[in-house]
Image (cartoon, rainbow, N blue to C red; front, top):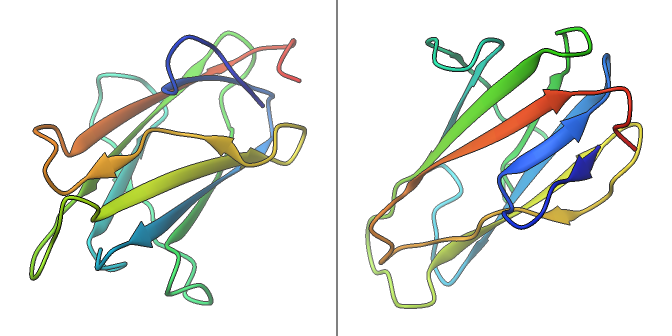
Length: 129
């Protein structure tokens, strides 16, 4: 997997690659307040991804790239904030791929951001490393 600049929202991935998304909460962000959906066809309704139950403090989600070269996957995630939040309350995202690309920085979502739903695009390519 590799990140495609200039944004932190687009990635090239290999067919069959496992992608891991790790959300680290800061300053009172509740780890239970992240929801993720994945669609094998961008623009279509996705299905929910469940977090790894063994990592409750840092919500971790995984999926395997199923489309062939030329396909794409769309991931939408939403961060909800409640309780005592501050200007520093946030979730930071790191992405890793099983075939390359470790701890790539994804978009950070702060409690006071207007947009709390973020889209990520994963284009399936042969030049994904």
